[in-house]
Image 1: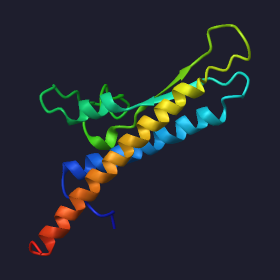
Image 2 (image 1 turned 180 degrees about the vertical axis):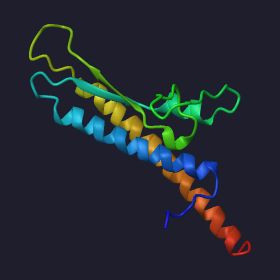
Image 3 (image 1 turned 30 degrees about the vertical axis):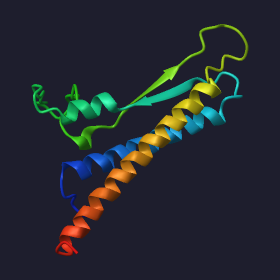
Image 4 (image 1 turned 90 degrees about the vertical axis):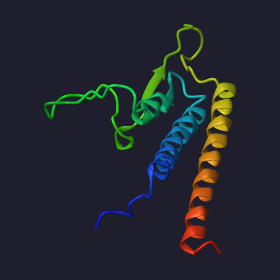
Amino acid sequence: MPGIQQFDTTMKLLQKVLDLRSKNQEIIGSNIANAETPGYSAQSFSFEDQLKSALSDNSPRQVTTQPGHIPISPGNLEQVTGKLSTTRDTTDIGDKNSVSVDQEMIKLSQNEILYEAAVSMLNKKLSMLKYAANNGS
């Protein structure tokens, strides 16, 4: 039996955002944990552009005609996975670690605020559904 089906695009979007923000949190946490590891390259995770592309209806859709084709951009929310990139130390000074703890803490705070905003929106959506299911009482 497949999982519970979502009610609309907004709930699917919020679920996907929460999943991606959780993944981003793990990557940021890993960077902070390895701030003193010699040779460690900081990683960053981005997914906002993929989400925008998946949600925009006015752009032409690219389709794959063979199973081995790689899609250029995600056509729906399920295909949004985000992009992981690595930043190498180019200063040639010190231990070759590219983590800036200050920048990572800013990213951590920003990610947490956006995660909490998505949770609040999802809770509001669920409370509206509960209200409707109880005939407005």
